[in-house]
Image (cartoon, rainbow, N blue to C red):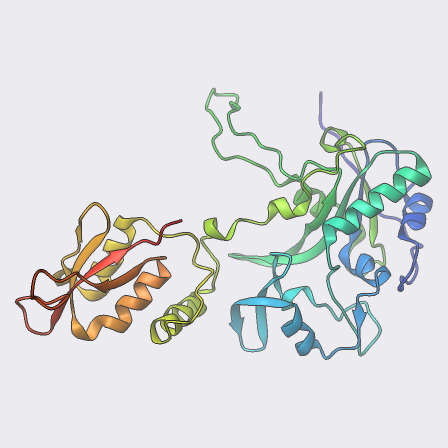
Length: 336
């Protein structure tokens, strides 16, 4: 059986303001059926929920930012309270009254659940709902729409354990189908078409039963412990060195603690092979120059480890070595 997908994005939505009946617009303009996926831009959801603001744009970005991931001049890529990593923390001043900005919905998954529930109550049909926003992609030019909220939809299609046509087992293949639906809908909506609603038909297999809203788009946000790109290249250097100069500086964005081999390799590469890193089984021991303390702190913190002068033996001072100007240190990985 061949695959077939239909996407419909109607005109006639009009201006959405605080209190606009989005459910009514969806039912009237999209006429959804069981198994359809309703796609709504986060901007109109936010407008309907009163998230348009006259705040200064930079102030709004500050308020919505949990951590700056990367900065180039005035451009900021920020991690939001939702766990999303977006340019300007998702703050938008396009397609809105001049002098205003639109913030992301407070809880896009909750917004999607409410819209799904409203469609069921008024139209008597079970649909999936995706709330979308525009995002760039690392290593790629341009932008595409992604799912920032979802309800009643399997947002990931896990293929792990299945086999391809050649008999090869698929280990980590998991298409982000909610993002793919968002991108397909955006092709029909357009950025300047004034069509913030869309209907995707042909993937009823992804729509969950009426009493199951699913995990939401939050399930697509990678766990920070597994995030290999939590900072931009420059910002990673700054964050590690800031933590090295101030022990109270919180360091996140580097993912989970690195393996001992990774840290040992980094120490040898940066401090020189004479650092002589050895694995003791319960951590690493290295002999480093006394002047390398700040660099060693930056390295260990960036790798999720800590260091201290090696325990003393008898009356020997902690970390003392036979080579003047060097110290023996113990590198430890914090317990989970």
